[in-house]
Image 1 (cartoon, rainbow, N blue to C red):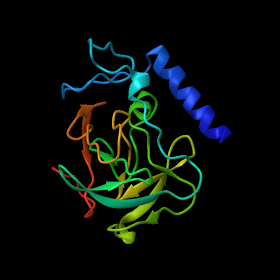
Image 2 (cartoon, one colour):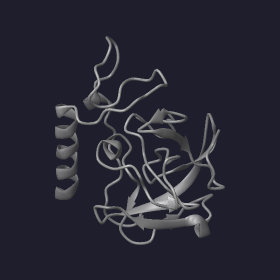
Image 3 (cartoon, one colour):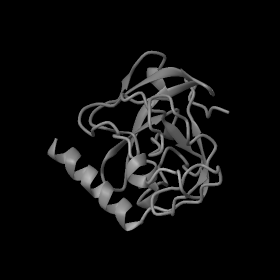
Image 4 (cartoon, rainbow, N blue to C red):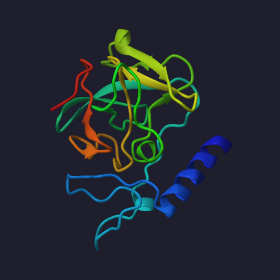
Amino acid sequence: MKKLLCVGALALGVLATGCGTGTDTSGASPVAGEETSPGEMTPSEMMTPMPAETGPAKLSVMPASIGKILVGSNQHTVYLFEKDKNGKSSCTDACAEAWPPVLTEGKPEAGEGIKANLLGTHKRPDGKMQVTYNNHPLYYFIKDEKPGDTKGQKLKDFGAEWFAVGPDGKKVG
């Protein structure tokens, strides 16, 4: 619990200082650090708790408006980043603030609809283990507020596009 509180406090501190900017071309509300227009949510209002980093991550499949997608243990959409190559993440620092990696302690678990042989991990530069599926490192999107949201779908952010992941391990859409 202490670890989760520290991570949350750190995330709020980074958001408050405006360190995580991106190039969102979707017209969606801004990434942390960018100004908001009247009626848009502030970064602190956008924050959605991501699963704690303790224990094995568990992925499953759920239907969404864009098709069947992979979700984490909190039922939030997981994404792949087209800039990642050879199963290694290229999303760190400000990128990882806006697109938190799906982390695991131990071997990730295959929930309903997940092909266990496509699950894997890779070690991030900070030493934490990130979940991969079909050799794609997986991420959440900080603006997905509730289970099944896909606000990160097809966004070009931090130098490449982001896509929800289908049960076959390929990008959706």
